[in-house]
Amino acid sequence: MASSNLYPTAELRSADARHYLHPFTDFKALAAEGSRVMVRGEGVWIEDSDGNRYLDGMAGLWCTNVGHGRSEIADAVHDQMKELAFYNSFFKTTNAPAIRLAEKLSTLAPNGMSRAFFCGSGSEANDTILRMVRYYWSLLGKPSKDIVISRVNGYHGSTMAGASLGGMKLMHSQGGMPIPGIVHISQPYWFAEGGDLSPAEFGLLAARELEKKIDELGENRVAAFIAEPIQGAGGVIIPPETYWPEISRICAEREILLIADEVICGFGRTGKWFGSHYYNIKPDLMPIAKGLTSGYLPMGAVMVSDRVAEVVVGIGEEFFHGYTYSGHPTCAAAALANLAIIEREGLVDRVANDIGPYFQKQWLALGDHPLVGEARMVGLIGALELVPNKPSRREKFADTGKVGTICRDISFKNGLVMRATRDSMIISPPLVIKHDEADELIRRATKTLDETHHVLQAQGLMR
Ligand SMILES: *Cc1c(COP(=O)(O)O)cnc(C)c1O
Image (cartoon, rainbow, N blue to C red; front, top):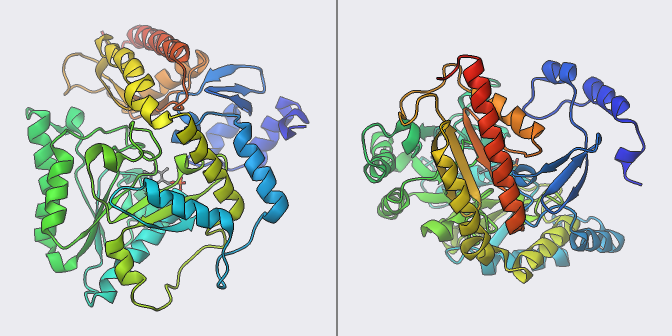
C-alpha cells in the first residue's frame, strides 16, 4: 500500500509542519497554512489527499516529460533494484545501465558530445562544470582563465556553485554568494527590459554584453559562458531570434567555452531533443537532469564535447571529483526506460509537429485577455505576462509577485497547476498531454485569468 494511504491527512499535515523543511519555502508561513499532500499521478493528472484532481501544467517541476504513473519505468527500476540496486563507479568498476545510458546520450546530444559525467541533479552537474572548466584551462597552461560569465535571473541550481552561477538576487542575499570568479550580464528579456528597441535589436544588444564583458575582464581571465537556451525558472525568458546566433559568433571568435544548461530545455521540451538543436547552439559542455529520468528518480549528467574531453581525458591524470551516486545503476535504468518511451511514442516530434502547435495556438490567443501583456511559447514551455494597463509594457503591478501569487492560488483552486514567477504565469506540461487535455488546460487558465481580473478590480489593483 502507498505510504500516503496509511495516515489521515490531518496527521500528515501536522507532522509535515513540525518536521519537514520544504525547499524554497517560508517555513513558518507554510506550517501555519498547511501543505497539500499529493498522493497519486496518472498522465497529466495529479491528485491530493482530499481527492482534488489537478492538471499538472508544470510536469512535476519541469521534468515529468513522459507523464505520471508510467509502469514501464517502475518495472525497469524494480528489475534493476533486484539485480543490482547500487554499486559505485569509483574503483575501476562500472555497471551496464550507466554504460548504456552514456552511450545512448552520445547519440542524442548536440555537437557530437560523446561523453557523460553522471551526478545526482542539475545543481551537481553545474558544480561539476565549474570544476571541469577551470581544470580544462589549467591543463592548457592557462589557469588565469577561471571566470565564468553567467546571466542575471538565470537559474543553474541551488548548491553554492549552482546558485552562484545563477543570477537570482534573492538567493545570493543568503549565504554569501556569488562565490568568487562568477560575473553576470543581462538577460535577453525583451518584454521587461527591451524598452523601445525591437526584439531583434534588443537580442543583439543583450548578446553583445558578453563581448563587452570579455573585453572588460580580459580574454585571458574568462573560462566560459553559461546560459539556458530558454531561461526557465527566471520566467520562461524566450530570447529574441537574434540572440543565440550572436552569442555563438562571440564564443567562436573568443577563446572561451560555451555551456548550454539544458536541464529544462532538454528531452523534447522545445520540440527538439535539446534546446541547443532548436537554437543551433554548439555547446562545449551541457548539464542535463530533470527530463533525463522524467523525475522518476534523481539523476543528472554533464555532457562533454570532444574539445574538452581531448584535454581532460587526454592528460592521463586523475580528476579528483565525483559523487557516490555517479552512474547510479537504478537511476540509469529509469533514464533508459524514460528515453525508450520518448523515442517509441515520438514525443519530441509530437511537440514539434502535433501537440506543440496545437497548444501554442490556444496559449498565444490568451494574449488577447485584458490582463495579459504578452503570451509566449516555444514547444511546450510558455509564459503569460500579467500587466495592469495593457498594452503598456512599462507599467507593472506595484508589489511585484503579489498578483502572480493571487493568480497561482486561483489556478490551484481551479484544478490547474501553473507556476508564478514575479507576475508572470508559467506553463510546462508533460509532453504526453492529449488534445482534449490541452483544451481543458486552456479552459482552466482562461477561467483563472478571468477570476484574477475580477479580484484585482475588486481590490483596486487595476482598472
Ligand atoms: C532545475 C534546474 C537546475 C537544478 O537542477 P536540480 O536538479 O534542482 O539541482 C539547473 N539548471 C536549470 C536550468 C534548472 O532548471
